[in-house]
Image 1 (cartoon, rainbow, N blue to C red):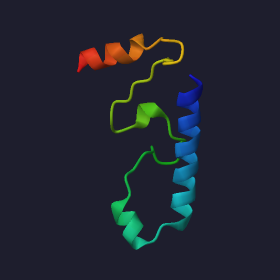
Image 2: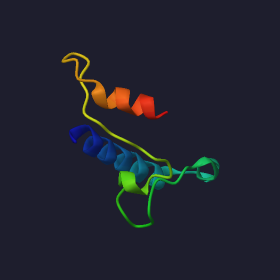
Image 3: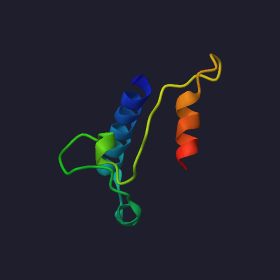
Image 4: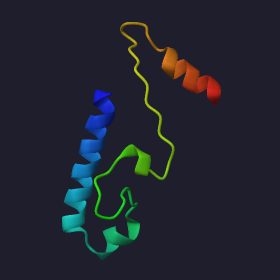
Length: 71
C-alpha cells in the first residue's frame, strides 16, 4: 500500500530529525518507535496498526466498515 509505505518513510524522517536535535526534556518525553539501529516498520509499532484500501469517492469503504464491526 502506497500510504502505508509513505507513512513509514515520514515517521523515519521524523525519528531521524528528532534524534539529531533532542534536548534533555524532549528525551524524557520521547516515545520510541524503533528497533535500535533499524528503519521504522509498522511491525515494530508498540500498538496494533491495520491498513485497508478505501475510497469514499468510489464508495468502497468495506474495509473500514469491517474494522468498525470488529470493535
